[in-house]
Length: 67
Image (cartoon, rainbow, N blue to C red; front, top):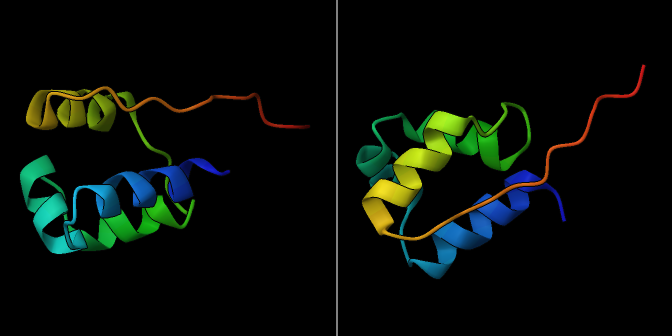
């Protein structure tokens, strides 16, 4: 499963729409959409914000890019 898909599943498990999730994380719904579609990376800052807001740990697997 890709990171964006995991983020989306996490959000859906919270029963939140992108707009509400984004507002709590201090980003736009468009940015959430980009992350969920793997068009933008899920940054350490976003991971920390999720932990702070939801009191839950959300982790992703980081792998090096192929040359």
